[in-house]
Structure formats: C-alpha cells, structure tokens
Image (tube, rainbow, N blue to C red):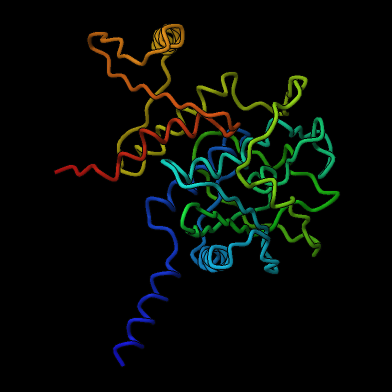
Length: 303
C-alpha cells in the first residue's frame, strides 16, 4: 500500500500546471504582444493548461518534440536549455517572428521575406480568446507547450482586421464573445523552428510597417506595459512614461555600451535599474532582459 501511495503522489506532482507566478508571466508575455497591436487580452484557461501540461510531460518523458494533434486547439511548442528567465526566453522564440509579419494579406501570405510567422500569428490571432500552457522538464532543458482556443492560423483568414482592435491598446481588455468560424484544421508551423539552435545571421529585411501602429514609440509602450503588469498584480497605480527620464536613461545606456562595463549613474533623486544580457539568439530582448528584474519578486515579501 505504501508503494502505491508513493507512485500516486509522484504522478500528481508531475501533472501540476505552472505555479501562479509562471502562469501570470506566460499570460502577460502573450498579452503584451496583443496590446502592442491593440487586440483584446487573452484569458487563462485551467482546462487548456492541464492539456498543455500533459503534452509537455509526454514530450519530456519521451525526449521528443512534436505537436500533440489535440483537436479544437491551436498549439505552440518550444524547447531550450535551462537558464535564468527561461520562460521569457521560450516565448521570445515565438514573438521574435513578428519581424517577418505584415498584416497586408490573409494567412499565410502575411509575411515579408521567407521567415516563420506561425507561432507569432497564433499568439495574436484575433479570434483566439483563451490560452493555457504547460512546462516539461528534462535533465538539461525546458519544454514549453501553449494551447489556444479558438485555434488560429486558418488558411485564407486574416490574422486581425481593423474591426478587431480595441479603443485603448495597452490596457487589459475583457474578451468579446467569440464569433463562430468554419471548422478547419489549422496549419502549425514546423516545431523544429522553436528548438534553440545556432543559426547564421538573417539577411537584412526591409523595414516592416504593420498596420495599424497603436503608438509612436513601440519600445516605450512595451516597457511601460511590462512594468505596469507587475504593479497591477499587487494593486499599486500604473506608472506613466516620462520622456525626460527616457533621454537621461538612453544617454547612460549609450555610455555603458561605449565603456563595456555596467555601472550605476548615481543620479540623485532617481531610482535606476540596469540589466545586461549577452546572447547571439534573436529572442525578444526587451521582454527577456526586463524579466531579469521581474523574476526577483519570488524573493520579495512586503512584511
């Protein structure tokens, strides 16, 4: 009887979905991309997360990497060696595809060049309203599986239209009632594209001008959204962007880059965070570097 209880306990632990902090991070990393365009936020589905976690465990146990084929959901998968801020790194492997995306034609012709777009377009698919994710562990790597309802990447459909955009991009939105679409199997991108691997430099691509652009300063908008997502978790007011502080921070960042050494500017009456990350991989470095700071919350208690 004792052996049976031990086995049941191990199985119960292995099927656990990500903890609340990881869940919040995964949801926010998705919604940051949607808010940059002006699309409604996704909501987290515990039911979908259980399905995604089951497949992540299966991939880890079998040392394989392929789509589950689960009916009724879209699916993104990614795998990388374990590291600090691994969740942001894995999601960044999908969101970096936005450099190849332009919303001027229905899927899959909404791309510039020959790069992959399908992981990113599933993240921002306008008719998708729910997401759930699971994380599998191997001895040396993490496997992320996210599943989506409604599924995206329907051939011949627009990723989003002007009618899908909300009035206040950057603010959390209540998802609207989903609209029924014809049943059609989505076409997931080749999963090998989301395995961490060295690659030659991409050829220089012409500037991409997605339509519409919700803000003149996408970098500022993304950073402000990431900061305020952390503040809303604990119920404190949002920050506002200050262009004078931006100019001061940019001057100091360029000074650090020239010197090659990270050091504080020591300006009076100003708080300051600095992060530096060396990588050759083209993940979304804004999100990845920001999470060097955000991940410290696991050590914080307001007592």
